[in-house]
Length: 297
Length: 320
Image 1: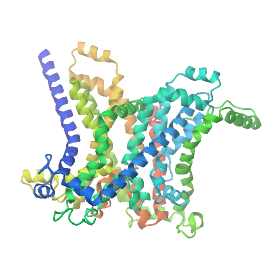
Image 2 (image 1 turned 60 degrees about the horizontal axis):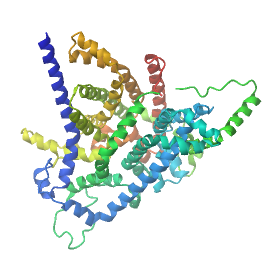
Image 3 (image 1 turned 45 degrees about the vertical axis):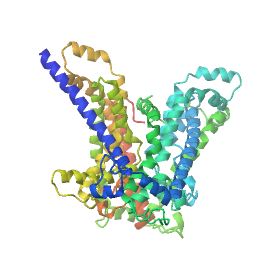
Image 4 (image 1 turned 90 degrees about the horizontal axis):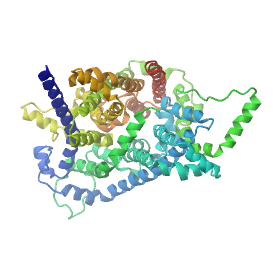
């Protein structure tokens, strides 16, 4: 009996290691594939197909990209960085201010504010009316603001932030209020400094959203100068020859074949580069955010 | 859903009005702090409702939203007519979401339960980081990765098939595989993320239950099946209801990021959301608005129903 139990427990543990191990490898494998192909030579890829180890390891693809379309890629990088930084700062300010207001229990209409926010989650007019007013009334067609303003306030993130503010004891505010501080001062001087981790968590969520956004560009942007990085990649993928059509400067590349396959993967790596480098530091904030959001207040 | 407000009842309208303005004045700074957020909601969620009228007209740019000729329900009728893709895209949406929900429960729950059985902290931390990573990638990047796997000339999938002596498949011109590929990609991207939600629930489990189960001679399998899974049930139900409430919404980014507007694969994976976008360009604004409106209304009904169901199961606690 006892022996059987030990055996079956061992089986469960083994199964756990195998399942988790396999799934984890399945999650990382495609990424390694992408990186490896981006460092391979185009001829080797054409001959042998993709593989997890770089073939004829070379930096040619990256050199090629920066020689032939360096300004385009840097331009897109600039757009993405601007959108991410400006969007995140604006979003954090708007989100935390409203979350703070709703977290104050003596605010009589806070439930009305919460309802106005909640309603937008469960019912919407749909894509087309949204697009019509954005283009006709707000002039967002081919505007950099189209990449920032429509997603600058996320109701989920606001409620997440509110959960954090709710955890702050109101007695901390009261002392300041007795000294004559108004609510904005209390928010700025007391609530925000006490919420550094929540601010980082919600800020990173917004930053990731802006960094990864290409959908707004697909909808609103035709002007190549305003393409964010993700949309630049989207265009390369949907049009294999987008990059080959760039003129090759004489002498720079002689008679190399156009590295279409490796270019796709290299641009992918360039797109996710910052995420890979920051991942070890930012991961725990996302985990914390998900856990806080999952636990209902 | 919470009720609009729980004000103290005022005897006369005049007093009520007075109270309303007095409250605004008293806490004007807090209300002002909500204004930027409210403006964004007004601009991008409430004002668009004025454009819903387009669904009942034959919209043209010259006459504008309210000047275009009224056509009643013609746009809605076309959706259900045999000439349109209406039924097909509804089927695609439901199919992809249904299996997305099923596998979107199975894998994350399995991950959470199995991670709980792993004693090596280093192994746990490493694998967890690996499984969470796909969440950070955009659908365009996932699309690039899928291209790397299924591209006919250089892709990994055909290399594998060749290894087993099978004929290569030209994946990008075979629609029949793509529903499965899209569902798999969704599970791949979200499982690590969703498993964190289940692990958050498991943190609060009463450990003494496991202790007494061990004393009673229960093995690990029995502990998982009789304790862990039943205790995870409320979380599973709530997350499932949330997803069922959104079952008529396709993931635009996922479909366009992976398949783009590849016309060969379109029939198999076009969902309502991408159909609305494509219709805007080919069939006009009015028809696209009508399809989007039907989706929103149906979605609203389902979400409210899911919320009621959640309240029944969860002792009065709704989904939002």
